[in-house]
Length: 370
Ligand SMILES: [Zn+2]
Ligand SMILES: [Zn+2]
Image 1 (spheres, rainbow, N blue to C red):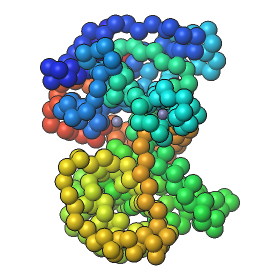
Image 2 (image 1 turned 90 degrees about the horizontal axis):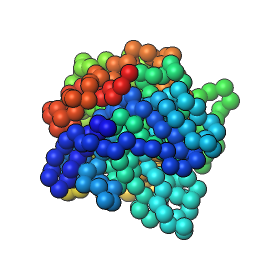
Image 3 (image 1 turned 180 degrees about the vertical axis):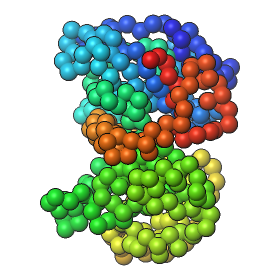
Image 4 (image 1 turned 120 degrees about the vertical axis):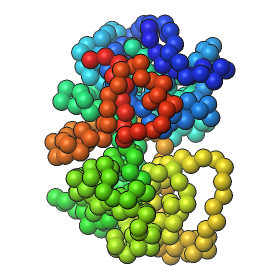
């Protein structure tokens, strides 16, 4: 069976021959891969900074953003049927019986850090013709999202982030859940970064009623600014607007959703977070490098303005379900914007330039089959 992976010992990104997977337990389902999205994580794995094959394998099959169609189900599968479209989740629990998050299917909060992740860490990914996994690791996709659901996994980053925001917001009962209004009604959000995670995050913010600004590098107009403004957010470029000017323009910033992985811009914006504001970090910067910042002023703000700074990684099943629901909503409200996020679909043969060549477009997808 065809698959695309890395062979770390040879520092190769290559097409590998992988054994056709078979169902081996009564709760598993077998899926034929339709689409696999490529993101910065895949491209980083292809520089061999991380990405570890499973034990006993020379290679790691890539791909963690996938959509497939169910071709077989085992005897005890209850919800999913042959012919259904499904999206798989990524992280699998650690084996430690004392890891309470993992034992409660919340491996996104795994306390031992011994989880594995499909296509990233010690578990093969989805850049292959077929894969098998337990039913509970799949989310049903309605047929109308056939050409959009590959965006579900990157959208889960925002969905889990916002679920954290709602938990935190519950400390301010007057600021959430007004009957008949979306939860972000009357609040202002700044999204840092206009990659797929940023654009999808901004869409969720608009959907939830936030007055939403996306702060990103490229001057406008550009492809991303056009998409962003088409669904009702405001695009602001770092090239002509400083974080202080951004804050003046926005007014009090209630939420920052960081989706750029650059600490300097992030902390500069954090300096302007508003009273009772929440700052959500989702990006992962390179480990090296130092930043000098006005620490006293920042700490004064955090305390005196009751601010919350929260990091979030990976996503639970509820966030995947929220992502599928919201993709449906985006598809109804902003079909062109959603369509434009997927820059192009490529055949498998193009994997080398997509993974190791110059980055182009917003979200590139490998179409494994029709
Ligand atoms: Zn990704
Ligand atoms: Zn765990």
